Amino acid sequence: MNLLHSPVLLYRVIEGLNIIPDGTYVDCTFGRGGHSINILKKIGKNGKLIAIDKDREAETFAREKFQNDNRFFFEKDNFSNIDSIIKKYNGENKVNGILLDLGVSSPQLDNPSRGFSFNKEGPIDMRMDTENKMTALLWLKKADVDEISKVLKKYGEEKYAYKIAIQIKNSIENNQLKTTLDLSRTIYNCYPKSKIRKKNPATKSFQAIRIFINKELQELEKILDDCLDLIEKGGRIVVISFHSLEDRIVKNFIKKHSQRKNLISKLPIFNINEDFILKKIKVPLKATEEEIKNNMRARSARIRVAERV
Ligand SMILES: C[S@@+](CC[C@H](N)C(=O)[O-])C[C@H]1O[C@@H](n2cnc3c(N)ncnc32)[C@H](O)[C@@H]1O
Image 1 (cartoon, rainbow, N blue to C red):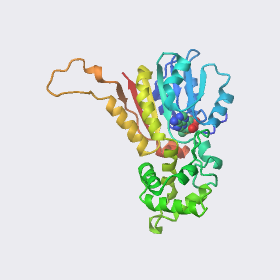
Image 2 (spheres, rainbow, N blue to C red):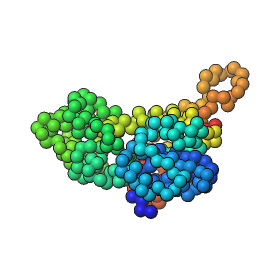
Image 3 (cartoon, protein in one colour):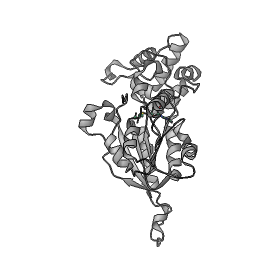
Image 4 (cartoon, helix red, strand yellow):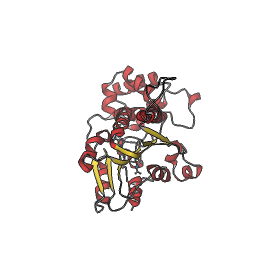
C-alpha cells in the first residue's frame, strides 16, 4: 500500500495502545492510515478499528484502500463527536484504545492548494475540513487588528503579533494579500533583519492561524474529556502532539485525572482508588535520533500515554 504519510512514533503508538486482538480501537486522526494499518495488523478477526478524519481527501483514501477490511469503519467527522461515532459503530460498548496524532498531515501540508504551507504558493485556506465555510483569508478579512494580533500571540506565541496584524490588514486594504506567499512576505517584512534566523518568520503565524481556523485546541480539550467515559478499564489513550500548547493540554489532563481529588491531608482515607481515573504510562516523550533522521515530522513530536483505571 502506498502510504503518503509515514507514521510518527509508530512503535511507541502500538506499544502504548497495548492492543488486545479482540479489542475495539479508535484512530481519531486517520490521515493516510499510517497508524491505522498497523493497528489492523495487531487486531484479530473479531477486533474493530473505527477511524475518523474531517478531511474529505483522507476519507476518499480510507474508503478506497480499506474497503475490503470488514474490521474497519470510517467516519468523516470531527473527532470531538467521538461519543456519537462510537455509539454508531460500537453501540453502548466502550473501546479499548484511542489514538490522537494531532496537527496536519503531510498530504495536507504538501498540497499547495490547501494553503497550509508558507513556502508554497496557494490560496490562504488552511481548512482541514473544506466543507467548513471559514477559510483563513475570509477570517483575516473579517477580523480586526486586535483580534488577529491576539490569535498570533495566543496560538503562535508570536512576539511581533501586533505589527504583523497591522501589516496584514494593510495588505488586504491594498489588495495585496491573495496567496500564502503574499502572507509569508507580509510577515517576513515585519521582522527586524537581525531577528531572522534559520526558521522562517512565517512559521509561528501560519501555525497560529491554522490552530484558530480549525479550533484545534478546543477540539482537543473536548475529546480528552469525552474519552474518560468511552474507554474500558485497562484501555489506553495515546496522544502525539507537535507543539507546546497541545502538549501542555495533554500533560495537564493526564495529571489532573491521575491525582487524588478532594484529598484532605491527615484525614483517614478510605477508597483511595475511587478518585483515580487515569494512570500515566511512562514512555520516552520524544522520538529517537534515528527516527528523526528517517522522518523529519518526528522532530517536534511528543507522545503521552495514559491508562483508564
Ligand atoms: C498528523 S495527521 C495524522 C496522520 C496519521 N496518523 C497517519 O499516520 O497517516 C492528522 C490528521 O488528523 C485530522 N484531524 C485533525 N484534527 C481533527 C479533528 N478535530 N477531527 C477530525 N480529524 C482531525 C487531519 O485532517 C489530519 O488528516
